[in-house]
Amino acid sequence: MVIVTILMAGLAVFAKYTQDHAVIQKSMSVCLIRAKTMALVLISQAHLCKTNATKLIFMVDSSYSSSGEPFRKQLQYITDVVSRITISASKFSVAVISYGTEARADINFNSYENKTELLSFIQNITFVNGTTNIPSACIEVKRILQLTPNDFQFVFLFTDGMPTSLSAAVGSIVDLRGFLKLSNEWNDVFLVAFGDDVRHEGFRQLSGDHRFGDVYPSINMEPLHQVFKKTVNIRCSACKVRRDSDIVFALDTSTIQSQTTYKASLGIFVQLMQSMDEFVFLGSEYVQIGTVHFSDTALSFLPLNFTTDLDTFASTFQAAKQDNRNSSSSLANALQFIWQEMFSDRQGARYSALKYVVFVNNGFDINMTETYNLVEEMTKDGIALISIGVGKNYKDGQVLNTASSPFHAYFSEQDRSTNQWTLQDTEFEFIKRLINRRLECTNRVNA
Image 1 (cartoon, rainbow, N blue to C red):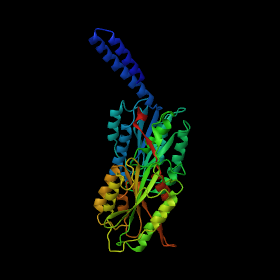
Image 2 (cartoon, one colour):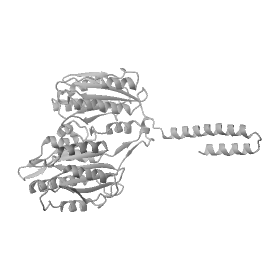
Image 3 (cartoon, rainbow, N blue to C red):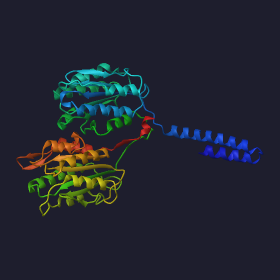
Image 4 (tube, rainbow, N blue to C red):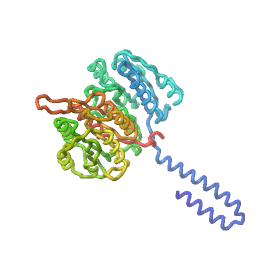
């Protein structure tokens, strides 16, 4: 902009002492356009993020348990990733491997000329069927991957966490990680959860990180963001860590459920808050937690900016009482209310904050169809919904259908010795991992 100002001032002075104003005005316009263009180029170059040449390999679960919609969603996920990156030798190259009983390379790094052709090939990948043979897929990855020093290579393994042989799959993934790191220590295998149901224990064993930092749900592009974070020039600010999250706990206080189930729901939330204590920092620039009570209707009980102390929130939450009247359970009303409030400031919500809703599903919802539709729409709107089954009345399908993805669905079990409902430690770890996701990258990373 300084260049533009100097040019304008100089031309104006020159014009003042020249009689041919028409010629000067024309020259002035041409120079001004050129100066602005030069300034914009300089500004653009300052904001570009230089990426290293990177290879992405997608391992598509094409076994019997992933037929139909899960298979289609996997192909769509790859399409979404490819649509966000530059396909070239100096930017990103993509390969796709499908695995069932056997594995095959559907798309190799040299199978296409451009992004349009690659996208067409992805949509034409056919289903394999059979068992879930992850070791064969790992062998195929090593076959098509040429390792050279300091290359960036990342594998996206799509799975429901239920391979034919979990122990064999774990061994093959460990071997593949070691193989990738021979080239570059940043290289890794990302586990992306796909399927009508997922087994969290399977992901725990397949993960190479005790904090499960390599495990991701299929509803966002965070694995790609992790690739960006590792491959983008360190001076680029395209990827940053977000600290602002709004979390709403939705508590069913209806009397259609028994007191035992209600207390079990409270217990699950208390356990979750205890597990969150190690990483949650409450505040207007950090995490905010609120509560919505619901039965026939929804009632805001604790606004998101109620307190900056997690212990205060927990003690207030635990003091909640079940309805003192006959009431039914309408999760749809609660979700509709939460959806509205999360995009307004009436309850302290921040419009641009990451948004999460955690609720217990006891199986008494009076309008499941409406609830399912709302969950789908809220997920599309960027709200992650975590559904936890509690009590003896819920069905697995209800919990799965009221979560943003099967990976967001959890099933508590009753401890016969204490008569308490609880989640496994692994499940609490994954819930914490979902809530604690913070990485965000801008489009500049692909410039």
